[in-house]
Structures are given as structure tokens and as C-alpha cells.
Amino acid sequence: MKPDVGYRRETPGAHPPYDHAAYASTHKRAPRHPPIKFEHTLSEITGPRFDARSLTAGDADLTHFNGAAALGERIIVTGQVLDESGHAIPSTLIEIWQANAAGRYAHDADRHDAPLDPHFAGIGKVMTDAAGNYRFTTIKPGAYPWRNHHNAWRPNHIHFSLFGPGFATRLITQMYFPGDPLLALDPIFNSVPDSAARERLVAAFDIETTMPEFALGYRFDFVLRGRLATPMDR
Amino acid sequence: MSRGQTPSQTVGPFFKPSLIHAGSETLATASTRGERIIVAGRVLDGDGAAVNDAMIEIWQANADGRYDHPDDQQEKRIDPNFRGFGRAATDEEGRFRFVTIVPGAVAGSGGVAQAPHINVSIFARGLLKRLVTRIYFPGEPLNAADSLLASVPAARRPTLIARAERSGPVREFIFDIILQGGNETVFLDI
Ligand SMILES: [Fe+3]
Image (tube, rainbow over all chains, first blue to last red; front, top):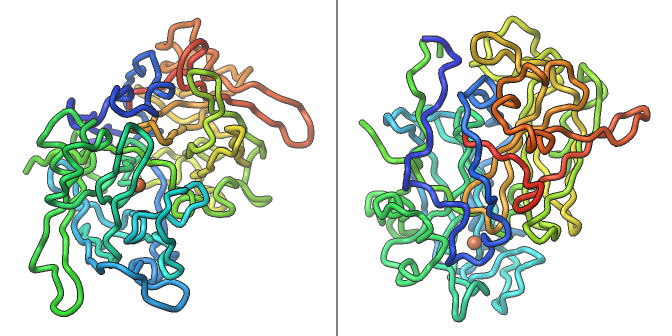
């Protein structure tokens, strides 16, 4: 096997379309022409890598900022980054951002009338270990309104950015919480056509991850596109 | 064991504090090999309005045409002063700007060289998954033989080729990204 073997394609139904009627911001931003498909080359197989030494322990703990503890419900989020064959993806960067417990982002453009928390920035980053595992501690984000339609509220969610081994495996997504009544009403969550795929965006409460007298634990695995065949020389 | 892919979701409007850092638009320093250039452009929506909350990422080979990645086993030099990855957020006018180098030609399928190009990902509010395109360079002799360019209808091919803005000490290339409508940029299904 040569190292220039490509990656698998998007599974039909597992990813949203560009144009999704219920999500107003897609209307002027979705291309009208279908994208052009071609065979993967080194350009799609290779991709950026990041140095674990650029991360600090504080990057995996969002619960303290500016010298004091953030308000809200402390939670632990952990899981594995895998490919479609179940192989762990080690040493890959995960970037994290989210609203505070009140549903407000520490961002100039967020005009929601909910309090900012001076001790919560809502920014984190972690790297998977040799077995593809990651873990961080944060505050459970609040729901927030957005102006997509009348009385529109985003369910509680955490944003994630992942690279994986190649340009083809890049993924930006959102993790949701089990039992959230807003999920059924959310155009972004429901933009994923396949219901089984959609459910993969919902974390699982996990008593094993939960730490006594400290925080509830949630498990959330990421599955990135796998290789068409495994190159020999890796 | 076969596992289902994690679906993509929009980057949303609030990514900047986490994803955008000072210096991430600068890929090339004085010690990087190759011709230092500026690659800039605007992101526009179907009404021609500026998209002021997009994130553009670029990934490219070094001046010798080699990617900084273990799966690139071409017999070409690695440049210790070039990683090949950059990231920029668009401003109020939808503008982005990178300082990089002209990439060398990378082998394509069948060992035929691809024309020099920069791989681009576009993320934004309203994009439920990223858009992918490539920036090619004007006047590049290899463009005529590039198999990806050849697979694009001729009328739309110019949207993949940057415009040389001026020839000063640092050449500047303009690559506008039109998300929708007349002159829509060619996007790629990878
Ligand atoms: Fe959000």
C-alpha cells in the first residue's frame, strides 16, 4: 500500500446540506453549483499538525479565568477521537469554545442580554493522547436565543474544531447534551438528515466519568473519516 | 469495527477568541525558502454582501512542492521554516489576507505534477459544513496540464485562479470567494 491512498468520502446523510431551509443564514451563503469531486492527492491526504508542547494544563480547564472560579455547573467532558474503522487518532488538536452558564459568549458580537462572567472565557484546547483520548473540565453552557425565527433558542452546546491526520479529515462540529428539549426544535441540529448520525452529536452522561463532590461527567467520541486502506509505512 | 462519521455543524459567529490568534495569517518569515507573496481577497454572499464572520484556512506545500507531513514521501526538501498552515478571520468588509510563499508543484495521481496551488477551507455562520476550494496562480505553465483544473468547466475555471494585483517587491494575489450566484467560486467535493 502506498502512503498516497486517499480518505473515505462523506457518508450520505451523515452531514448537513449547504442549503437548509430552516436555517436562514444558509440562504445567501449556500453555493448553487454542486461541488466538483476529484481523486484525493497529497494535498488532501496531508494536513497541518500541531505541537503538544504549545498547550498548557490550563488549556484543558475552562473553569477558572482571571484568578477565580467561573459560575455555573462544573462538568467533565471526555472521549476518544477515532476513525471509521475504530482506530484511535493520536496527537490531534481539539479546539473548544462555548457560552457561559448564562448563555452568553465572551465575544463583542454577542448581544444577548445575559451576564458575562469575568471568570469564564469559554476557550479551551486539548490534544489527544497516544490512545486518542481527550478530557477537559468546563462549565455547562446555557441555552441562548438567536434570531433565526420567532422564539428561537439554541440548545446547550459546546463547539469543537478538529483536524485529524489530513486536510480531508478536518471537522468543525457541536456537542449537545442528552434530554435537551430544545434539540427537537433546533434547525442546526436537525440539519443532519440521518437521525442516527444526528444522535451522534449528543453526549452521554457517564457516572464513571462523574467525580464525587466535584462534577458530572459526559462522554463524547468523535469519528473522523477513515482511510480507504491503511498505508503500510505509518 | 465500523463507526459512523461525526456530523459537521456550523462554526457559528463566535469562534474568533478561540480559533484566531495573532500571527496565524503569516506562514512565511524572512528565513522561509521561496518567493514571499501576499494572498488576499474578500468573501461575498449571494447578494454580493461582505461575509464578515468567516474563517479562512489555507494549507500548502513549501517552495519545493513538499508538504510538512509524514505521508508526503516525495524526495524533496522539508523547509524547517515553513509549516504550510494559516488561518484568518474576515473583517467587516469580508477581507482576509495571508503572507506566504508561492508553493512548488506537488505530484498528483499517476505521478503527473499538479500545478502549484493553495488548499482553502471556508467556515462561517450559515455554512453547516466547510467549503473547500483551491487557489491557483496566473500565468503558471503547469495550469494547462492540471487534472483538477481540466475537470472544471472552462467558463468557471477562472474562479480558481488568483489575480496578480501588482508587481512590487512583494507580489500580491487577489482571490475573492463568491459563495453564491453569478461568478460563484468553484468549490470542491473532497
Ligand atoms: Fe454557539
